Image (cartoon, rainbow, N blue to C red; front, side):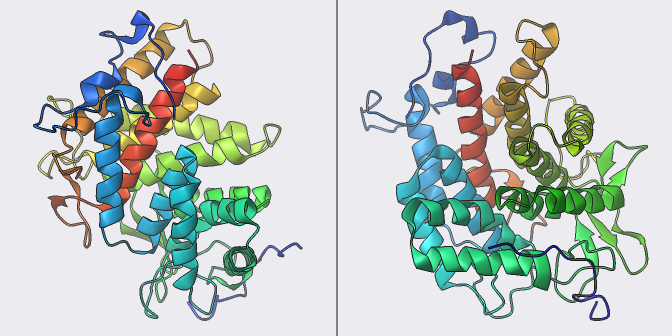
Length: 380
């Protein structure tokens, strides 16, 4: 990797809501009241102002559980992104300061130790850090975002074509990278660099005959180092591409390419459910454990696509209604896996992601999916 470090082409750095009461979205599409688990919660406060009306208790529990969990760099970054999308700056801004307090000398934030191996994982905090800096105008946050930008654009190890690797000491691209880096580059004002990184990752990892992405590609050997069709890895690609479509200028010619890619990926992933409507940890291996994180990730991408009209613009069409219905059904499955403490169970679990359990990243994704669904519903 050292022989490629900094020698690739680089880009230069430059100086709550209430649910509508329409009956149209009750039994047919699901209602957020169905997302409240039948438990012995005795708050008696269903009418409190909250994020999503009847879903307040569940969303609040998921959020509190997320904030109680230890988080690595990408988990902190994904949580920050969730609170940014929720518009909750009172939570986001302290998280941004904490991420900056754990910034390494090279500009990577939210790192728990000097030995942080992730190259692009810390960049997952980028868009939210940028928003916090703009909101507060605090010089510490402003300087930190500039340092992260310099890392992402110039300092991060990359190949001869300028595509940034995922981890130190490993010349690999991961499907996770599609979420971690390109959206931040677009938010920071570098859409062409964002497109270049996205293309580099998708071209290396996408398996046309499968319609899905492999998990890891080794640039040194020019072959897949992990060809498995990991569900959460494809979920990161779905979410990262959905965010990137929304961040790119509408006239950017690459946007159409991304929309076509995302539509195909959305449809192919959905077809990977088993007879009970569940996804599995490896999408084409039903003997791996059932996994509900990919369901949240799929719902997030679909809701973004419906709201922003790149997945289906005709809200009266059968296609639109089918996407919306499928998303409700999957999100209902996810919410049923939230226990009384707000922990989303039966997802690919941290810290090693080799078994079923819970993970901070999926707590954040769950919040993002519910919020995206709520926004989609409000626009109707």
